[in-house]
Figure 1: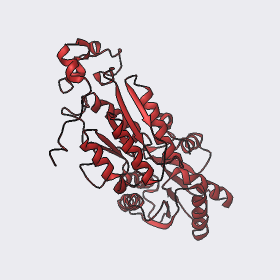
Figure 2: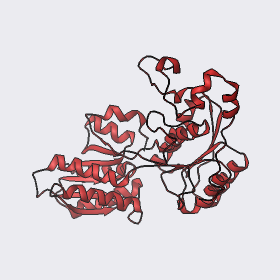
Figure 3: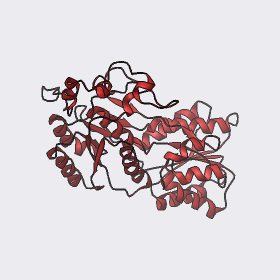
Figure 4: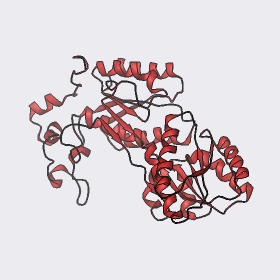
Length: 353
């Protein structure tokens, strides 16, 4: 790492505040020291004991993401805004969503020129946005990389990722739990865009989990994460497979079309597992009104987590109840299975597809 890249990030007025001895802000200035007791930190009885939620210095955060042309992507920006609104000390500057790489690079350059305190960036193309992310880091502005990774480890101070392989493992493990002991079961898979590494990771995790209980994918088709492609792929699958015991569909947005094809075909001899965790999929699981019995979450709250991390970085704090020294370099989120038994736990944070 170059000396430039090692330059400490601007800490707003942290140093000045600490020297002034403002007692109410001392915890924020010395975030790597043990947390103060709940009462001293202002936490209500039964609430969080960490002082990280206490108001601190104002932090201006630039946020850029691809266009909200997909339920999950729309959920990303909505969750980021909602997270920022919970903190009066956060000023979130949201650039218009775009799938044009040049436009997104320009948005980040504007954030740099405006000297924001941090940038949360879900790049349309991680490789293409790497140079401008490096430029921000070299300017002393920490970048939080969300979902699609940059090419360089120096382009982000922290990265928040979903777990695509883990999604497949979770879906396969659930299928095994329902079909275990039935080695002749027919398992089908409706993937997303096959050329994407995320799709390949999901499929590998699914196959690995099925292998653990002696099952395999008997029929597989691929869609394109859209309603229309999901309906077409599912129609082809149902025509090719006269009997199915379980289906894993990678994505709940395309799942709208998948369920339409299933209804049109009048098929219900199997159960289905979804992917990503949309609100309408969860409502259907809760109502028990279709073959969809579970879905696997790929959190649409990743950018919201990025906003929280950016706020802590801007205020010189750490994840004090998790990590003693500074914000972790990378956070990989879990991919839990949502069923009728636990759907209420996840429905509130789900996205609409």
